[in-house]
Amino acid sequence: MKIHVKKGKLTAIKSQAIILALFQDQKELTGTPLLIDQAGNGLITELINNGDFAAKPSQISVVYTRGAIPAQRIALVGLGKKSAVDLEIIRTAFAKVMQYLRNINVQEAATSPELNWLPEEKDKTVQAIVEGALLGLYQYTPYKTVGREDIKEMEQLNIVVEGKEYSFIESAVKKAQIITGAVYFARDLVSAPSNEMTPSVMAQKAGQIARRKNVTGKVLDKAKIKLLGMNSLLGVAAGSNEEPKFIILEYSGGSKSAAPIVLVGKGLTFDSGGICIKPAEKMDEMKSDMAGGAAVMGAVMAAADLQLPLNIIGLIPATENMPSGTAYKPGDILKSYSGKTIEVINTDAEGRLILADALSYASRYKPAAIIDVATLTGACIIALGDDVIGMLGKDEQLKKEINMAAEITGELVWELPLWESYHEQIKSDIADYKNSGGRAAGTITAAAFLSKFVGDFPWVHLDIAGPAWTSKDKSYIPKGASGIAVRLLVEFLRNRAFAEKK
Ligand code: BES
Ligand code: MN
Ligand code: ZN
Image (tube, rainbow, N blue to C red; front, side):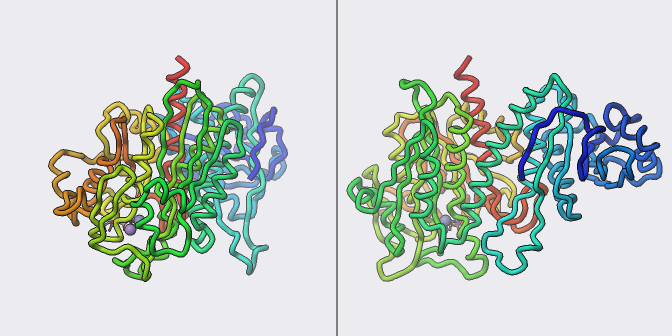
């Protein structure tokens, strides 16, 4: 869907539907809704007084204007109580109303952002409207060949602005489009089946990002990975006919001397479990095991498009985890890139193995911070459910920054402890570490394992196993790939960039 920012008034605009968002506890109509109500002979007050519409969060009512104003329909959407409104409520309301309009075959709509909903967060309000509208309308359709003509699509959203706020709103919309574009990019990568989204294809997609200004891309092939001694990554890749790739994206928007932020994303294009093969049920969803890598690629892409004054590195170890005659086996010992040895207890605990090498590689950059994003453990879903990102790390400042970004983006994050005592569980009898600490505290012991491969740099681990893939529609996340952590990372980076400038 295209978004146009236009000068004008909602009351005067020709549109298939104008969207008006109202509060539940609003006693009287004001502003544009009042003008439209008057022009339409009480058309909105009638709906409210008769109880059709109470403006509860995401409640929707669509009425025809019958010529009272140039727009054909009015779509009312509720924002709930004014005192309780937040960015998530706005995102959700706009997602729902756009989906509703698309369902009734409306192809174009218009709305005006009200910057007084959240006076402290004017640009974020505009961003939330755009995010809700675009993210809620996402559909993945390239493989639908039958009945394509029945696919409903919203063509355009006009953001109508009166006078002085125009350039402010236009710039906020542009930024929001960049960010949602990066979420779409990540969702597309994760939605694609693993027979298409192989490590090589992921590397090609990274190449598209590398064409941007200030971005360079490098892909280490299997020979180079071997030469560097990334045997932990190679071990996981051993069972697959697909060549592993180690993808490197370098964005240099900051000063030459500024230490970069390194983002590491798990790029398991398909996780069968390997020799410790997974049950068939839901194994198809394991094409989404590269969601962390997709999120990192999306974040670098958005950072470059936003021209953030930062240096950012994206590292994505990409491979399949397959069982075969050449596959790595339980009991095998791998010598990682760091030199530390790992006893393989379970070939299904492969994510931490490929991340180990990437996290050690990150040290090369003497980073200001390292953040890894991974669909790492089923245990995280047991602990926190389907909607929440697990966060682990030792750096209080970095965790605080992630929590702040979570608050703004609505990408929920909850911290789990990483106390010393958990490290006992990953000690191996014959190697330095083992790749599984058993069922107890599975998310924590996975993070404890990762911590052994991070140099002395501020580091945070984000386990996105729960929210990366969703089996049921959530307001602005249609079922399937969520693109989770793109907006979180971008918000974190934008805040860093802002702090840098001061
Ligand atoms: N990719 C999975 C984790 C996962 C499970 C993500 C379900 C999303 C949904 C990961 O590689 C894995 O298999 N982890 C194992 C670790 C265990 C063998 C120590 C797990 O969580 O069971
Ligand atoms: Mn696994
Ligand atoms: Zn996995």
